[in-house]
Length: 137
Image (cartoon, rainbow, N blue to C red; front, side, top):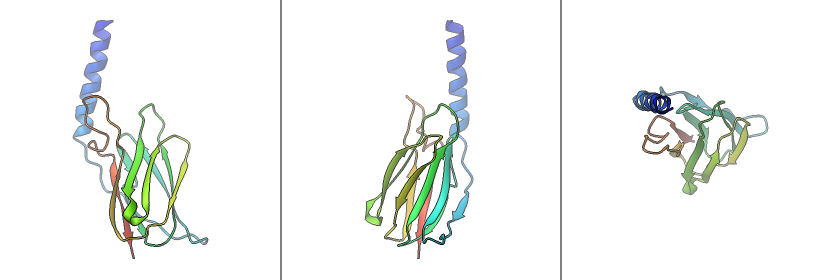
């Protein structure tokens, strides 16, 4: 039993070391405005990534993010704190899509990330699970 536990721990450490060296390529999406005047986009969180990880929206136009996580047991969340721009949320991701709605009131680049961390490993953010919401004119 100890040997099995040791093997599992070794594999987990090796996997964490591998993942910590990865950088996610930029996947940029410019969100279009629907016929109802809302900017809608689906965001998937997974094994230390967000897809897309750069989201471009227009200022003063309502936004609906449909967020979910890929299947698996690892817990993830999505946090973006920019109350000065009308954007402030923190949601736990599930395989069932959830809607986050807001209207950005200020242009700029606002970072979002998964804030989860397991024991002494790097945080999910430090492993690449982060992105930027870019609000433009």
